[in-house]
Image 1 (tube, rainbow, N blue to C red):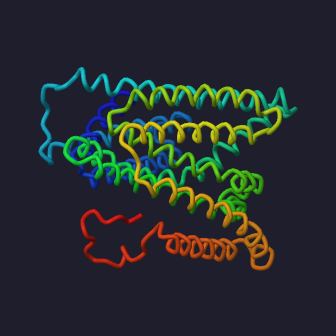
Image 2 (image 1 turned 180 degrees about the horizontal axis):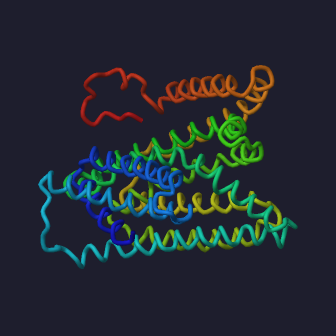
Length: 377
């Protein structure tokens, strides 16, 4: 899998750099579809006469091989050719900080998965199964939903990063600054919207998805984590696209150190919520550092910060109001209708606020031909 994942990552990166986002996205979707199909077949049929754990591993390997072959076929069909590597030293210089950052990220994930259950056992009096269950609920049930806005903003990053990287050499600083400001505002607006929905309907979402009220409580109380996580993610991508990989690496190291300190101190006082608090501190600190670096390096549109703060304040107020509304609707109408009504009300109020404060210009969406350079946010 190390070989296949290395090969398909390079070829997929080629499509990304060529701005062929359709092939890039479709092959990624196809990978997930193949993975689900092969895993289901191998687990249900036992075709290789191996245990279920090995069946899953074999499914992952076969998926990697299949998607690698598909990507290479697309690569050659679209004019790709094998050639002598160029700019090796420059690529290594740029990629080394990113590689080390990824390694540190994996190590920190391992640190959290080992440290949190251990501290819950030693500091909070949980048994080992209880502590493991608490962490599994937080990381396996809540965090996938917390990542929802980051996934949407990540799609923006797929298109934005090559655009900014190329514009850094061909366009004016004002053009790049405007695109960066729009991306940050978009990230903040999207994450704030999901915060409003999940803070009010999180309990009901978890009840439907997992039949677990405790997971719903965790989601509702920690959905604020979405906002710094989402903005931090896009700022890292932007800085990397501007050639600031070393700065993002150093920023990540500082945040990891702070994350470790908070993780070691807080479980005694917060229990499993120390996990979410640690991540919140990590991403908030990352946002502050990365936004400072961006402002220092290329500047920021004057209204980016004000718009983002307005959306944040509005979402906090609306989220608090919607919690009571959602609970009342749930009592009267049940979980499903509560989600529909609460989400609809929150969406309408939030969009009206964005429109009234000129953060989002609704008229733009009615124009068939948007003038070049017109701001959406």
